[in-house]
Image 1 (cartoon, rainbow, N blue to C red):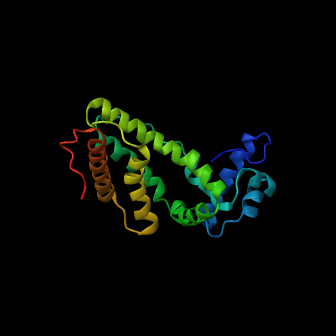
Image 2 (cartoon, helix red, strand yellow):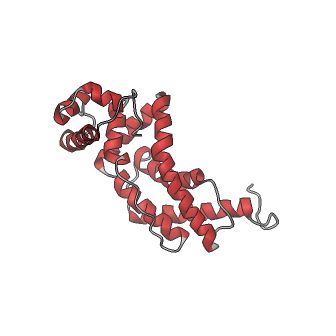
Image 3 (cartoon, rainbow, N blue to C red):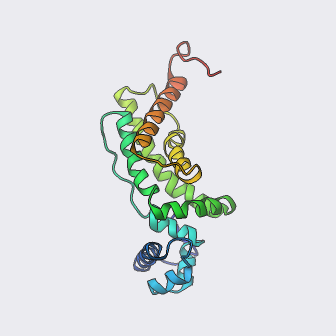
Length: 208
Protein backbone atom coordinates (compact mmCIF):
# COMPACT_ATOMS: atom_id res chain seq x y z
CA UNK A 1 0.00 0.00 0.00
CA UNK A 2 2.99 2.22 -0.44
CA UNK A 3 2.18 2.94 -4.08
CA UNK A 4 3.00 6.41 -5.33
CA UNK A 5 0.08 8.82 -5.39
CA UNK A 6 0.52 11.72 -7.80
CA UNK A 7 3.76 10.84 -9.60
CA UNK A 8 6.25 12.89 -7.56
CA UNK A 9 9.48 11.39 -6.19
CA UNK A 10 9.01 10.02 -2.69
CA UNK A 11 11.08 11.26 0.26
CA UNK A 12 11.76 8.30 2.55
CA UNK A 13 12.43 10.65 5.48
CA UNK A 14 8.99 12.21 5.09
CA UNK A 15 7.45 8.73 4.78
CA UNK A 16 9.12 7.69 8.03
CA UNK A 17 8.08 10.85 9.87
CA UNK A 18 4.43 10.50 8.82
CA UNK A 19 4.17 6.86 9.85
CA UNK A 20 6.06 7.40 13.11
CA UNK A 21 3.83 10.35 13.99
CA UNK A 22 0.75 8.27 13.19
CA UNK A 23 1.85 5.44 15.49
CA UNK A 24 2.71 7.82 18.33
CA UNK A 25 -0.58 9.69 18.08
CA UNK A 26 -2.65 6.49 17.93
CA UNK A 27 -0.94 5.41 21.16
CA UNK A 28 -1.59 8.85 22.66
CA UNK A 29 -5.15 9.72 21.58
CA UNK A 30 -6.51 6.55 19.96
CA UNK A 31 -7.54 6.03 16.37
CA UNK A 32 -11.06 7.56 16.55
CA UNK A 33 -9.66 10.91 17.79
CA UNK A 34 -6.75 10.92 15.34
CA UNK A 35 -6.80 13.57 12.60
CA UNK A 36 -4.66 14.16 9.54
CA UNK A 37 -4.00 17.68 10.82
CA UNK A 38 -2.52 16.24 14.01
CA UNK A 39 -0.29 13.86 12.07
CA UNK A 40 0.91 16.63 9.74
CA UNK A 41 1.80 18.90 12.65
CA UNK A 42 3.48 16.10 14.62
CA UNK A 43 5.48 14.96 11.58
CA UNK A 44 6.40 18.50 10.52
CA UNK A 45 4.89 18.15 7.05
CA UNK A 46 1.98 19.66 5.16
CA UNK A 47 -1.33 17.84 4.76
CA UNK A 48 -0.70 17.70 1.03
CA UNK A 49 2.34 15.48 1.65
CA UNK A 50 0.09 13.02 3.48
CA UNK A 51 -2.65 13.01 0.86
CA UNK A 52 -0.11 12.42 -1.90
CA UNK A 53 0.69 9.16 -0.14
CA UNK A 54 -2.58 8.03 1.41
CA UNK A 55 -6.19 8.43 0.35
CA UNK A 56 -7.52 8.67 3.88
CA UNK A 57 -6.79 8.58 7.58
CA UNK A 58 -7.68 4.88 7.66
CA UNK A 59 -5.18 3.97 4.95
CA UNK A 60 -2.42 5.99 6.61
CA UNK A 61 -3.11 4.40 9.98
CA UNK A 62 -3.28 0.92 8.48
CA UNK A 63 0.11 1.29 6.82
CA UNK A 64 1.61 2.68 10.03
CA UNK A 65 0.27 -0.03 12.34
CA UNK A 66 0.04 -3.14 10.15
CA UNK A 67 1.44 -2.98 6.63
CA UNK A 68 4.69 -1.27 7.65
CA UNK A 69 5.63 -4.34 9.66
CA UNK A 70 7.37 -6.92 7.46
CA UNK A 71 5.93 -10.39 7.36
CA UNK A 72 7.81 -12.79 9.62
CA UNK A 73 10.08 -15.37 8.00
CA UNK A 74 8.42 -18.74 7.64
CA UNK A 75 8.96 -20.86 10.71
CA UNK A 76 9.95 -24.00 8.79
CA UNK A 77 8.60 -26.30 11.49
CA UNK A 78 8.57 -29.32 9.18
CA UNK A 79 4.79 -29.71 9.14
CA UNK A 80 1.86 -27.90 7.56
CA UNK A 81 0.09 -27.52 10.89
CA UNK A 82 3.21 -26.23 12.60
CA UNK A 83 3.88 -23.64 9.90
CA UNK A 84 0.26 -22.44 9.92
CA UNK A 85 0.22 -22.26 13.72
CA UNK A 86 3.41 -20.20 13.82
CA UNK A 87 2.04 -17.84 11.18
CA UNK A 88 -1.36 -17.33 12.80
CA UNK A 89 0.20 -16.75 16.23
CA UNK A 90 2.26 -13.92 14.77
CA UNK A 91 -0.77 -12.39 13.09
CA UNK A 92 -2.87 -12.78 16.23
CA UNK A 93 -0.45 -10.56 18.14
CA UNK A 94 -0.65 -7.88 15.43
CA UNK A 95 -4.36 -8.10 14.72
CA UNK A 96 -5.44 -8.18 18.37
CA UNK A 97 -3.42 -5.07 19.27
CA UNK A 98 -5.60 -2.17 20.50
CA UNK A 99 -4.71 0.04 17.53
CA UNK A 100 -5.64 -2.69 15.06
CA UNK A 101 -8.93 -3.38 16.87
CA UNK A 102 -9.80 0.32 16.60
CA UNK A 103 -8.71 0.66 12.98
CA UNK A 104 -10.05 -2.49 11.32
CA UNK A 105 -13.76 -1.54 11.23
CA UNK A 106 -12.96 1.86 9.69
CA UNK A 107 -10.67 0.30 7.10
CA UNK A 108 -13.24 -2.37 6.18
CA UNK A 109 -15.85 0.36 5.64
CA UNK A 110 -13.50 2.33 3.39
CA UNK A 111 -12.55 -0.71 1.33
CA UNK A 112 -16.22 -1.25 0.55
CA UNK A 113 -16.66 2.20 -1.00
CA UNK A 114 -13.18 3.07 -2.30
CA UNK A 115 -12.17 0.90 -5.31
CA UNK A 116 -8.71 2.49 -5.57
CA UNK A 117 -7.95 1.78 -1.93
CA UNK A 118 -9.33 -1.74 -2.25
CA UNK A 119 -7.08 -2.42 -5.26
CA UNK A 120 -3.99 -1.22 -3.39
CA UNK A 121 -4.98 -3.30 -0.37
CA UNK A 122 -5.36 -6.39 -2.55
CA UNK A 123 -2.17 -5.82 -4.54
CA UNK A 124 0.11 -5.12 -1.59
CA UNK A 125 -0.92 -6.34 1.85
CA UNK A 126 -3.11 -9.29 0.84
CA UNK A 127 -0.78 -10.31 -1.99
CA UNK A 128 2.15 -10.50 0.44
CA UNK A 129 0.16 -12.60 2.91
CA UNK A 130 -1.05 -14.94 0.18
CA UNK A 131 2.52 -15.36 -1.07
CA UNK A 132 3.45 -16.63 2.39
CA UNK A 133 0.62 -19.16 2.24
CA UNK A 134 1.72 -20.23 -1.23
CA UNK A 135 5.20 -20.98 0.10
CA UNK A 136 3.84 -22.94 3.07
CA UNK A 137 1.64 -24.98 0.73
CA UNK A 138 4.50 -25.65 -1.71
CA UNK A 139 6.69 -26.91 1.13
CA UNK A 140 3.90 -29.18 2.37
CA UNK A 141 3.49 -30.61 -1.13
CA UNK A 142 7.24 -31.19 -1.38
CA UNK A 143 7.17 -33.07 1.95
CA UNK A 144 4.29 -35.23 0.71
CA UNK A 145 1.79 -33.85 3.23
CA UNK A 146 -0.53 -32.52 0.54
CA UNK A 147 -1.70 -34.23 -2.63
CA UNK A 148 -1.07 -31.01 -4.57
CA UNK A 149 -1.29 -27.26 -4.37
CA UNK A 150 -4.42 -25.25 -3.68
CA UNK A 151 -5.25 -21.60 -4.23
CA UNK A 152 -3.34 -19.67 -1.53
CA UNK A 153 -6.24 -17.21 -1.37
CA UNK A 154 -8.43 -20.05 -0.09
CA UNK A 155 -5.83 -21.04 2.52
CA UNK A 156 -5.59 -17.38 3.54
CA UNK A 157 -9.37 -17.22 3.93
CA UNK A 158 -9.53 -20.40 6.00
CA UNK A 159 -6.96 -19.18 8.54
CA UNK A 160 -6.54 -15.40 8.64
CA UNK A 161 -10.05 -14.74 7.35
CA UNK A 162 -11.41 -16.72 10.29
CA UNK A 163 -9.14 -14.88 12.71
CA UNK A 164 -10.20 -11.48 11.36
CA UNK A 165 -13.86 -12.44 11.61
CA UNK A 166 -13.44 -13.58 15.21
CA UNK A 167 -11.61 -10.39 16.22
CA UNK A 168 -13.38 -7.69 14.24
CA UNK A 169 -16.90 -8.94 13.51
CA UNK A 170 -17.85 -11.51 16.16
CA UNK A 171 -15.74 -9.80 18.88
CA UNK A 172 -14.75 -13.13 20.38
CA UNK A 173 -12.16 -13.37 23.18
CA UNK A 174 -9.49 -14.97 21.00
CA UNK A 175 -6.80 -16.74 23.03
CA UNK A 176 -4.00 -19.13 22.14
CA UNK A 177 -6.17 -22.28 22.45
CA UNK A 178 -8.58 -20.78 19.92
CA UNK A 179 -5.69 -19.79 17.66
CA UNK A 180 -4.39 -23.36 17.90
CA UNK A 181 -7.83 -24.69 16.94
CA UNK A 182 -7.98 -22.29 13.97
CA UNK A 183 -4.64 -23.62 12.74
CA UNK A 184 -5.86 -27.22 13.13
CA UNK A 185 -9.11 -26.46 11.27
CA UNK A 186 -7.22 -24.67 8.47
CA UNK A 187 -4.81 -27.61 8.17
CA UNK A 188 -7.70 -30.04 7.84
CA UNK A 189 -9.44 -27.79 5.31
CA UNK A 190 -6.35 -27.30 3.17
CA UNK A 191 -5.65 -31.04 3.23
CA UNK A 192 -9.23 -31.83 2.22
CA UNK A 193 -9.12 -29.32 -0.64
CA UNK A 194 -5.83 -30.72 -1.90
CA UNK A 195 -7.28 -34.25 -1.80
CA UNK A 196 -10.40 -33.10 -3.60
CA UNK A 197 -8.51 -31.36 -6.39
CA UNK A 198 -5.58 -33.73 -6.80
CA UNK A 199 -6.42 -37.04 -5.15
CA UNK A 200 -7.90 -40.23 -6.59
CA UNK A 201 -11.45 -39.36 -7.71
CA UNK A 202 -12.56 -42.74 -6.40
CA UNK A 203 -11.32 -41.89 -2.91
CA UNK A 204 -12.51 -38.30 -2.66
CA UNK A 205 -16.21 -38.18 -1.91
CA UNK A 206 -18.15 -35.28 -3.32
CA UNK A 207 -19.56 -32.95 -0.65
CA UNK A 208 -23.29 -33.33 -0.10
